Amino acid sequence: MSHYFENTDAPLVTRTITATVFDNELDFLTAGGVFSGSRLDLGTSVLLREVDPPMDGRVLDLGCGFGPIAVGLAVAEPGITVDAIDVNERAVELTRRNAERHGVADRVHPMTPDEVPDDRHYQEIWSNPPIRIGKQALHELLLTWLPRLEDDGVAWLVVGKNLGADSLQGWLSDQGWPTEKLASAKGFRVFKVSRGLPERG
Image (cartoon, rainbow, N blue to C red):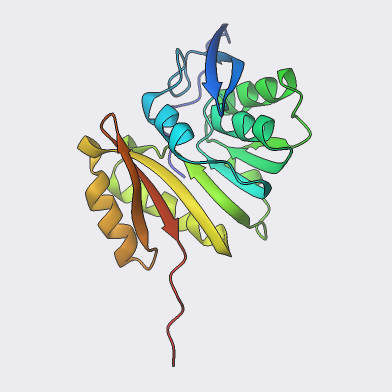
C-alpha cells in the first residue's frame, strides 16, 4: 500500500473540527500531515451522506485519515466493528484519539495495513481512495483489499469525476468486481462494488 502522505517527524499540533456524520454532530481532532487535516473532505462528506451504515458486522475503513468514517460508523451503529487502516501513523493515532473521545474505542481499531490479520474479512469496505498515488498503485491497493470482502459483502467508494471516476468504474468491472454508480454529487461519484459471480463450469 503506497504512501499517500508521508509520515512526518514534525510535532503533532492538533486542532478540533466539527462535522455532522449520520445526523450526529461530532468533534474530531485533526492535524497537519494527514489527509484533509483542516476539514472534512468534500468527497468523504458525499460518501457519508449518500450511503447508510450497516446495522452490524465488521467494516474496513480503507485510508482512514483522522477517522471520520470509522468513528462516524461506530457512533451511528453500536453493532459495527471497524478496522481503520492508514499508512500514515499520525492518521492512525488521530483516529485512535477520536475513537476514544467518542466512546467507541472498543469497536474502532486503528492500525497500519501490515497489522491487519491475514485471515480477516469484511462485510463492507468504505473508502475515499487515494487517487493521487497514481493509477498503478491505486489498482494494486484495490486489488489487495477488495478480496477481503465476504462473499455477500460490498465496498463503497467515492471518487472525483475529474480524477477518473468513470474509467475506474469500468476497470473494476473488467477485473471481476461489478461496480454501479449509486450517486453523483458535487463532482464526485459514489460507487457500490460487489463480488462477481463465480464462473460456472
